[in-house]
Length: 199
Image 1: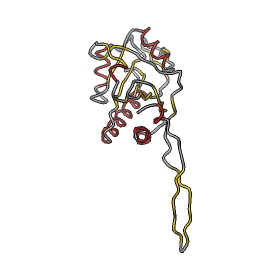
Image 2: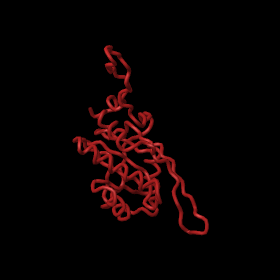
Image 3: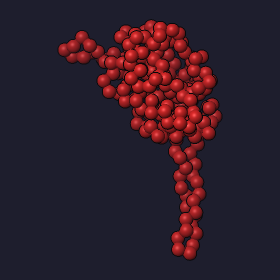
Image 4: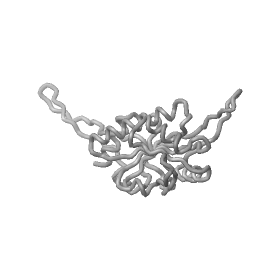
């Protein structure tokens, strides 16, 4: 998969419909891809720390596609929903012999240690890679991918949440960012968009 084939153009298809004794040509829309092409300014190589405490980055993803999620393990709702959706996409693509690695990058390195990350991602998919790093490393990767995040203190509690953007980022087999999916995009639509691009 590369950027040229991932940027699928929507098109119309012709359908011939028989009505009585006549034939009528009608326009039927082809598949509409969901999400959007990634702006060229976003993306780039990174190396962080995986759940085993070892360096892991875009070089380790070369040869497969990847779906990259940014979030945090203490997230009450959005992150679990996103990761579960991504796991379904990965499994659907596997059925079509398309290999995509799910990758979770924390934006809360203060709490998300490699062990914490490992326990968390194992709940969603056996192939999911969890990544953490120093605060500066995470900030650098988030900036490269256009990810906004900020700490939100909770009233009457010493705990906190993290506010963050929740796009899902598709990397091609060279490790380049090519496409972005929205939180509202459905599993089957994401899978079909990638299937069409892999073509």
